[in-house]
Image 1: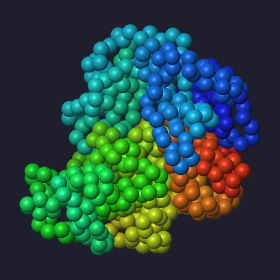
Image 2 (image 1 turned 90 degrees about the vertical axis):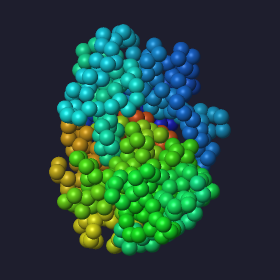
Image 3 (image 1 turned 30 degrees about the vertical axis):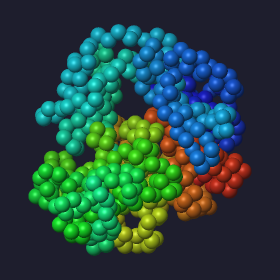
Length: 529
């Protein structure tokens, strides 16, 4: 689907049939992008504000959330688009205000002339069509009631569709948009992105000693806390393996406050660390910024449930699965736990749809924040429990410089089934939705590599453009703000690049070295000015 972009103050606005203005040389573009985006000329921010204020008055824009940005004293207001009372899939605008003054806006807004909003199918028929399309033998359950949406097919074609969300057990959760007239599946994507508190101690998978926040009762100590005296959030680690947890509570248990060697220890400790990181470095109060309970299921195993970790939107929690032939202990890696936690953060901010470019951005920010978390808590170096620029090295039973999943410093050094992981837009692998949901795990390394260049410094091997590093703390601040405050659910790579520029400008100013190196890092991975 083509999108037309309005650009203002380095912030992008995808709008159909709305005039706009070009902003100058500091905007970034992707030449020969696989999904073409039309750039329109632009009108003033004041005119856009007036236009959208009228749309709010008509009920076509409805406030979804307000994000308070204390670092630069800004508010970011997210509005969802509606057409005749029906939400528009992907239609969302973010208004950015500083000291009560609108400084920019971005997102996607569709100019819809006429759509038949009377469904020919009822929701039960749509749910049946979607479930049949998934070809699963066991029964599926609805995650939440189905609802009507307007789905943009192209620049001038829109369909009334049912959004259907289903799940099966722990390992499968899918969202579909089903044509409300014909019953065809227009879109399908995964929702699995892949009492008194006391302090105890436990041994992690690599024999490391870790402090644990526990709950004590008459029977002993549990890896759970409903008490908020240690951290202002409830945390629950549940062992899915019925042979080693209490059958009633399903929570890892010890008769004293010392837990034996197990990845349960890693997961429970790491989730507390990660909460601390997000609060101390970004002022964030947990996954949803309102201290949503931190839930993790460990030792998950079953058909399709092994050698992996995942954030489940349906469960609102994380899954850490037991190994089969790979011997991966996914709960043993701080970066893996941080990766899944960050998927949860994305679910409650930009809500990046898990397909194609938006899905690759979803995976990229999880790898990026996971790496920043690792460098915050662990010493840099090679070996287990060391901070580095690769993902997943601690999940292997033995350490090797080649045992990892993805490499931010040199993505091409590792290959997936589709070829070497890309580090430049020229290497973007244009996959169908049936392959890795359009390349979400494949193309994520392009922006992850840009983060490495910005944080550490280095030269991209394709463009041969060098970037001077600004440090991982500053780089993580820029990426976190761009991905949580600026991006919308169907954001593209071009939109992410320009969001990073705006985030750097907000934090450090347009004439700063930090802004200049963000710009240089985007040129290095293939964007053009």
